[in-house]
Image (cartoon, rainbow, N blue to C red; front, side, top):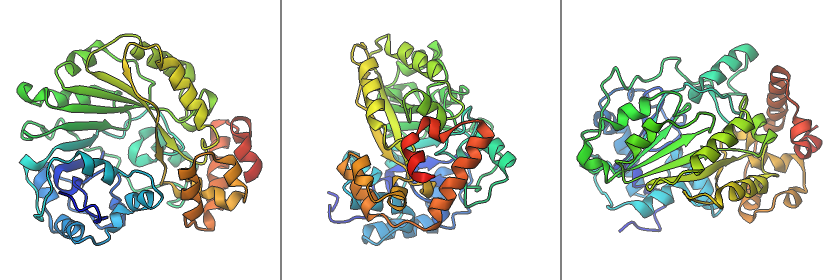
Length: 381
């Protein structure tokens, strides 16, 4: 049994692997690699990369309940009563571990960033995860303070490196993220490396921005798996989503999602995932209302909206509201969000960075913060 008093133990350090778009390996997507000195992990030998002295020291700290600096996002959420990724996966874990290494038979969860190729440049994203963002940053000439410039132009090539999931017999869940996961068929190529006899035991998670119509080939592949969970990344209703998730078009996204929800498929499940930032904190109810309306009569399996807190870039965090107004408690309805804002430590430069970031993007994109998010514009400028 996992010791519930241990705030550093995370099952993903033993049974999970995440591969970044640039080939860097982590235990999960929230493990802050820039908070460490991981340099040796860009390799196709996953377990060799995952059993380095660095990860042995991380596992040792986890077992001894010592703070792991790269896990600061989970610590912060748990402090404010928000269920963290660590807590979520500890509940799902079948086994606990005490060794400082892991092996193929331990791996139950694999998350793959399929590449940086993406048709959007969302405010809350960065060049590491979007090729479109890379083009924007080069035009703007921004510095590291405004956007994370730690990226490689060359993606990790799963195909030419003969990447395969055939060796993980106890695999229970695969998660695909991007870039945009459906912008090519790389996800299907990887799923087809899994032996047919084990597919029925595996859940597949997809995160997609909703701009790309689903193909019959997706469903033909998915029907052989235990379950497929499709997560539409939507951060606002209508023009707010178009503003945050630029240059998306709401009518295209809504049409694609409605098309997905129109036909029942036994093992396919749909849900909306929303990243909570200072840009949409005043309008979260509109997203929920829209999703409830279009999904209520759907024959498909659906679930209520999942809200995930933005940590990076930090100046877009809802915590910045504390610098903008003393009346944020009247603008924010959720108690857990209020607690997060109230107890967050923010830097003085965040307000200046936020203004510069939004002004620059509005000018380049021909958008207007005041026209789309007047409540934020009024307290910011």
